[in-house]
Amino acid sequence: MDQTSPLTAQSPQVRDVLLHRFGITDYRPHQAKVIDAVLAGRDVLFTLPTGGGKSLVYQLPAMVLPGVTVVISPLIALMKDQVDALRKKDLPATFVNSTLSANQRAERLQLAIDGRVKLLFITPERFRSPAFLEIIDQLNVTRLAIDEAHCISMWGHDFRPDYSQLDTYRNLLGNPPTIALTATATPDVAADIVQQLQLTDPLIERAGIERENLFLAATSVYDNDEKLDRLAHLIRSIDGPGIVYGAVIRDLHQIKEGLRQRGINCLLYHGELSSHERKQMQDRFMQSKNEVVLATNAFGMGIDKANVRFVIHVQIPRNLEAWIQEVGRAGRDGKPSWCELIYQEQDIAIQQNFIQWANPSREFLIGVYRTLENWGERIVTKDLDDLRKELLFKDKADNRVTICLKWLEVLGITEGSIEMGNLHIVKPLDADHLPEIVGHEDKLKNDLHGLLGLMQFALNTESNCRRAVIAEHFELDDIPQSCHACDACVERDAHLSEHFSPRPQGEVQTARTRADHFHRGDWVRVDGRHIGQVIKVHKRGRDIELIVESAGDLRTRKVNIRRQTVEKIQQ
Image (tube, rainbow, N blue to C red):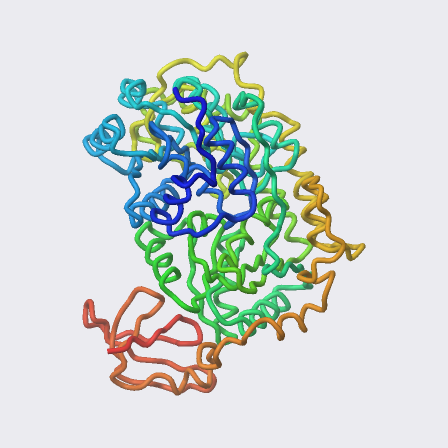
């Protein structure tokens, strides 16, 4: 394995690849230093806010160094987006995951074995595949990149059981030089990542919130009406696409309705939509110049849309790290962008529940295993709801059962999937030899402490510069006194009117303008799905009712435009 290289980020060969293969003329802050370390074969931990350019520091070296760089990514959709972007630049990259057939996976792995692929994206689960393990020695893996590396640490904001095994997986690859990347990591999390991966004398490069184009703010509101009024005001005041994050799907539907009553239509994205609907919403947002999407935090991973003008949270995220990662999706084009948390203090109870549900006890895990064991052969007839009912937990938002099933899979206790009807136990659970992290009480306390830290950041009782509060939280050296781009340093409404253009009036329609918007013969899309033609328009007081003939089954339906989302389709 090549452990040293005379190449640096400024070498003509590397600069040529940077310009002609990636289309980039120069490096952003921190990139050249990290690339030098990767080219020299050093282990690296690189922390850089979302949109700061983390991917380049392993993608560029992969193109100029021998062998294959394996990239471990937690989300299938994210790796597909990354590979699609690389292929558009004609760069040799591919991914292997469960969405592909066995033959497709074998073909792509053979491309890597033959040296025709420089970047191979996989999920951690791939290391549990016998077919993958059989060919792992033939891959000539010379470097390993771990995306979303905070998922390794139980002190991080998004720990994942699969990531707890990455030190073992790294050993299987022959301990290649490794770069771990994350948008956010406190010193404790950074140290834990280094320890868990057993990195040797790594370069640790940690950057703060350096994107001055992001305006940071938090607003406390008394009730939902005040929250909706503030949200509607921001949407009207900022032209361009935006993301509004909420924690609870039910509440997102209510916010969508509240905005609609205020004359604002939004897209909706959450886990209860079908995969087709989610893709449709994502594609519409990506192609739009001014769409606003209401979403849970799953939306945005891998969204490479440079002109997102605002990211607004209407419920409290679980901690400051999560908030920073999500607001980093705004303003990647360098233009002014707005990031605001609109919250009610009682919102904290929602996240407290989520944190409790994300930390099942050892006893709960053992209870899940014993239930599966007692089912015996009947296990193939059961589903998640059956398992929740058996354990007396019926709330679908309570994901303790799902997390325990993942642990049993990661530990090799089970194989298959309860959703696919092929789950089965392959070896008994030894409760005395469970990893220490399972049900660790300190992790629960740490997660609750993180939620408290976010609340303190939101309240900001001492009116400190928000970037200074963030820098202190991450123990960064450069702590600003005033950033001139947060609500503690400048008057926010003045900043809003000075740096942002209002949304065109026609795009924020009132009920009255919408009443005049529809006419007999118009083709419309109702609730984002049903397409039909307007055959009559009724005005009933404040309500506007359309009689729409469906293009699918030719049935006529009454549609109230104050209660349903109706879009005119240009013919």
